Image 1 (tube, rainbow, N blue to C red):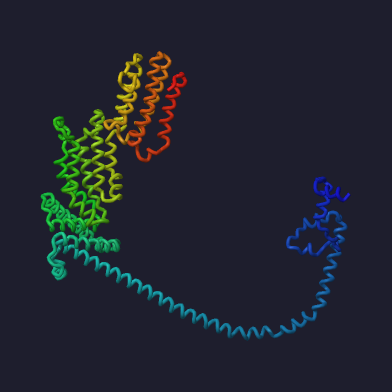
Image 2 (tube, helix red, strand yellow):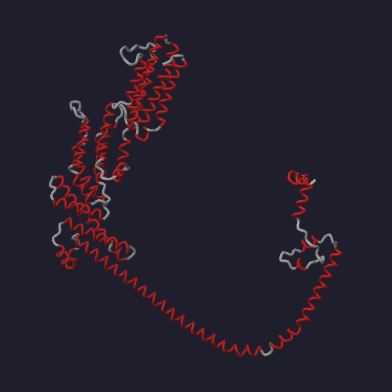
Length: 556
């Protein structure tokens, strides 16, 4: 029996067992002594409606009786409480007699103290207000003093720059005469460099006092100083460039050039200096190198005239322009000078676009290919003149560089070459009478023309690096076209032709695998050469070619 009860307790899921478990979990509470419990009435969450609904089993009459009984009990307890503490109530009233007089006696001295405290507070507040007014007045004096000092510094700086630039020399002559004597007999470049340093200080001071009336009244003097400084700098740089252009690169000339370029850097006007170098120095040389007749009547010349022109430009950059590049890239390293790009490259592209526009024409594909490859080789050599990666990145992102590269219409060249290759291939493949090639690797003319077209795409006379993806796509398309041609030929050819086709297909597969490994992959961009998609796409095209023979029961 006990074993049966044990099993029932483990495996039985009846309602009786659930009822037993619920009864065990329920805590049995004792019955209340009264129907109305005081604890229910004094609870914080007491609600009359809830209380009455919980007692609805008693009925209204019984509930009334119970509430009256509870009320009587409360009144009885209240009376007992009063009787018990009555003596304390009486003693409290006796003890409080005379307290009002004591309060009145204390009120008078307290009022006096309050009045004295208010008088002291008012006095100290007046002292604080006076101190604040004095501190504000002192701050105003300090600001006026600083403003006056700033005005004096600005006036002194303007006068000093004017003296150094020989403006109003009579005003500041006596003041700076001793300073000039102590400095010695400086060259014009050194004097302008000193003026530029003082000019920067003046600009800083003017920036601090830009809202002052004194600055507005003397704005014409500041403008005159700026114009005079730019004129003197331009004249000094132009003179030094003329000496360099004439081959008179003496020590004083180089020193004057360094001081002048450093001065431009000090006043943050490097772009102005680069423009002067471009117009007064670079342009003079390039006009002799680049001209419209360079591409005309060049049949008798054994050397490419365009390559010769680029060679002369590189020679100019590495020889005639090198002193200026040494100053901007080494002596003034860290400045914002980019003479190689802003002065030389910008002028090169401008002159070529103006005088040699014919090199961009893709109509003559062979000439276009030669011009483009020659130009790319020149650009690669030109980039080698950059002294840092930052300078090279600046060159490649320069607007003139981007515009120059866009002038080469590579997509147009590819379309023309595509039409030429496709037309030649289609002429042969659409000819039903295929000629036989004796003594060659390919037996049929259709195979030969496809292989020749693919090799032409990647030859040095046709292929361009910027069109790698297009030539690779054309290669796959040619293989696909050859596959379709083989399919058509197998359906109509005799056994002899099928044998030759089998031999040709085998040669095409081996040739493509070899050319891809030794020629095509080496010409693709480095980041693409190791891509699995390249080999997979080629293998898929060759597998389809094999499948055509297999479906026609021709085996390699």
